[in-house]
Amino acid sequence: IMDLPPEVLVEIFNLIDNKDLPNVRLTCKKLCEAANRPFGFANFTERAHVVSPYSINALVDITEHPIFGSYVK
Image (cartoon, rainbow, N blue to C red; front, side):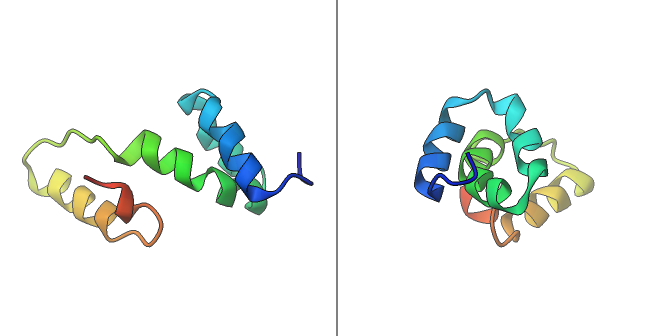
């Protein structure tokens, strides 16, 4: 799997269960980077937040994240 190009890895990670993506990202840097897009879509495109200072600050932190901020809608 390590010899596959990043584009193929992304397609593979698009097919695995979203609950497994965090574990994929923990394995190594190459797999983490390849799993960023599927992970971002799975975890940040739809979020529910309570209107509280803590929750709003968490949302702001996510939107300012250099990788995952662009996935927040």
